[in-house]
Image (tube, rainbow, N blue to C red; front, side):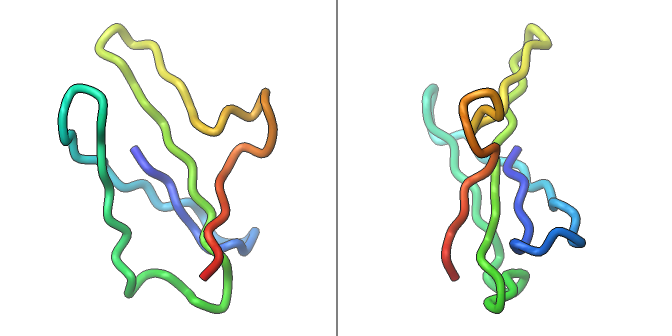
Length: 71
């Protein structure tokens, strides 16, 4: 799952499902109409495995827990 929102603390993150390309690659498309160009775009990824184990990237234990894309 990909979570995204404008770099505006009052806005919630919106989840988007990712599509499997092959065994090791996924893709997601964020509709450009939902991107507020007044603010940078923040995003992070959550991966859940069939075993029930999950990971989030970027990992909050290793640094800032989201990526920022300049708009």
